[in-house]
Length: 153
Image (tube, rainbow, N blue to C red):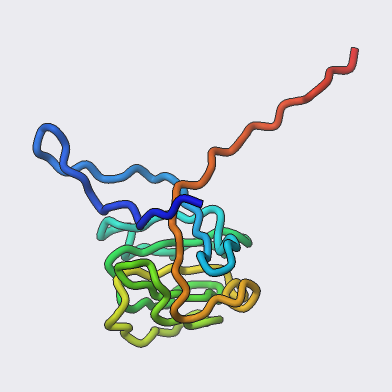
């Protein structure tokens, strides 16, 4: 499996201006087990996206997540559901895990973290994620539209 780091926040363009990555979905794999941690992860890298986070959502479906760039602490104020929180360092290694964080809480600051992944509650326990695990963040495969394989005449 090809390993790659988290895509850069911005890239220089030929015109000298920053080019931000598009709102593509990513998947995250645990290197130790090759198990999929999440298959549809959105990235929040702008100030507005990072501040909004998961606010206004009714929940996260299994396999969904949010990767918040440049973040060492989170809050769940005004949220309506419990989440698992995974803090990762610059090398995409897990430095802290806070499972089942309920609404109206604030995490501790994790100074070794660079980014945070928010997942549906119970995900961390299901996949047995632990501190020190390396995570592989890569573009999610494109969704294949369902097409009939035969026709009825």
